[in-house]
Image (cartoon, rainbow, N blue to C red):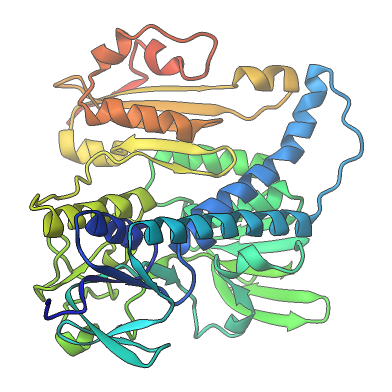
Amino acid sequence: MSEFDYDLFVIGAGSGGVRAARMAATHGAKVAIAEEYRVGGTCVIRGCVPKKLMVYASKFAHDFEDAAGFGWTVGETSFDWSTLITRKDAEIDRLNGLYIKNLERHNVEIIQSRAEIQAPHRIWLTGQERHVTARYILVATGGRPNLPTDLPGAEHLITSNEVFHLDKMPDRVVVVGAGYIALEFACIFNGLGAETTVLYRGEEILRGFDDDIRESLHEEMEKRGIRILTQDNLASVEKKEEGLTVRTIAGRTLQADQVLCAIGRSPYTDGLGLDRVGVALAGNGAIKVDEYNRTNVDHIFAVGDVTDRVNLTPVAIREGAALAETLFNNNPTITDYENIATAVFTQPEIGTVGMTEAEATKAYGNLDIYSAKFRPMKNTLAGNDEKMLMKIIVAADSGKVVGCHILGPDAGEMSQLLGIAVKMGATKADFDATVAVHPTAAEELVTMKEPTRRVRA
């Protein structure tokens, strides 16, 4: 009989934790997973999935406008917030149920309780007031939204947790921050008809992305009527009978029904008992791990956003799978973080893989930049002036494609396929040798023959 209750105990039933638990059980381990909220984690319950459903909803108003250019007469339209939220909630409930069934099918015990590390190999279940033991402990608690708690009126702010459960659609929204979460919700509310303002302390939106993409998205969002205020930030929020009064450090006064604070997320490690066993944390609270997801305490591991490496759902899933392979299938596995494709579901959306131009300049020095900015075919008859941007970054000395960046319709779908090519080490010559699919926007990726500009060290 084992000296432990479980071979693996997982704290947090998000994407990474669920994958690790299920695969470990497949390899014969006795596994339990504890979750204090709902199985599925941020992505499924209050993140990527419900957000994408709301993105779809917000696009219809623009589609109705575009339809007129193709001969359609669209009658009076209206939007009902409660219908969207009800149907969104039903879909999330369905997915939550599937996650639970999948874990149960693999004989993973689901414990509906907060779990804290009490001592080496020992976990305290606060909701059940009992402890269990495990040979290995995996922390996969993800992250949570940041809030400026010292801000006057901070209690009137909402985050990406609460935004999915508003009782009614706000007519006026101020979004604080300009990362992908902030900008996606700004576009959602704008598309649904809200007067939308983005307030950001930096010089340009979407820090960390390619500069051409950032500037072009800024331009297109403003064309859609979104007000973007940079180099400014919240000073206070005051609740009045007619709504919220927002004052900024630059002296602006804004009126809103909701103020969405999307200024980043932090690893969720508070109160987990990591200090009791000496698990090392970074300055922001992230759990420090090695390439095999092991902490400095040999039986404790961590995957996903709680480690603050690459905070994307598919990455957490890969890390969880790698952990199960390493611990229970005698197959030490590490996750490759190079050239991970990703998408931002703004309007227009972004698809990207590889280096930005700034990163590539530092890494390679000599670059050939290929770019095309144009109006997609659909927009011509629609009378829609929205532009699409495609950019390929090539290391000039080798001809290797080291970055691809797209702004426009279906950019996320394109980036998944581009990710394969870039991951395989495709060269610009490989792109050039590929016959175009016509008429598509994507054909621009294989028809740009001459560099737009050259960067030389």
